[in-house]
Image (cartoon, rainbow, N blue to C red):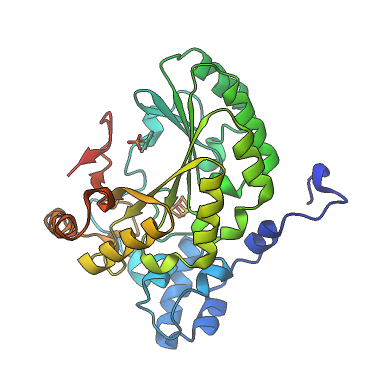
Length: 334
Ligand SMILES: *Cc1c(COP(=O)(O)O)cnc(C)c1O
Ligand code: SF4
């Protein structure tokens, strides 16, 4: 259904691209000419957690190679269906830190809003793959309560829009929320965590840049990019435009076996990010979510990788290796 505000108007191009994302395993197999013997397991895994990947992201993958580092991130595998001890459904115990549905206040001074369950891409390692989004969406009926909570907590200076992916929401809604937040004098910074500028750079269009540039808050965008091959010309151009709108650009990655668990991959990623005007922020150890155990890299190897990276790159290109621990007041550096 087309929202009333858009009737008689063309929806933005990114929304059509989002709707055209590939969600069918057989289509992905045909597009990338993947080995057919892996198809039945992929179909089964996609039934438990749906495949979703924009066509522009598929275009950056190598054909015929099921080990492509971009493909690995979205490829449903039979291994996801195995239950592995220690990998559960709410690895971060987030349901305990929610004073208003969808508002996470775990860390002093900043809150995180899970605005939507929608994403432009379904990442197989995602720690929110079992998250109760439908009961935890503050953006509509809980928005007044969210603002009220912020009003009662003048020590909060930063609001983080997360999800799902906040940039799957319309600019109209995002702009309205950003304006409301800017109306609270103690809020100084608006941060967005999004994978959309990487997997669907067309999202960074004029209407988005307009409301970002018009807002009084300090703006931070943390993109989620795990491998240098994700950054093509369209992504670099999007980054340049965001920087032009005054947005500070950072990246966070998840350390993923078979994707970026080598010094070469981590160094190349940092260099590509820097060339696009983005600084590395965090490298996350995988959250132990059911279905993602095959991505796990052990702590000793993770430390070794980050040490080797530190030898080879300037300090400002080395992300902080962290883990999220339930109940801690910040991410835990390793
Ligand atoms: C990661 C996270 C933040 C932000 O942490 P920073 O260290 O400031 O990046 C805030 N709230 C929650 C619930 C988080 O998970
Ligand atoms: S975009 Fe983020 S929230 Fe969405 S599936 Fe990927 S990792 Fe999870």
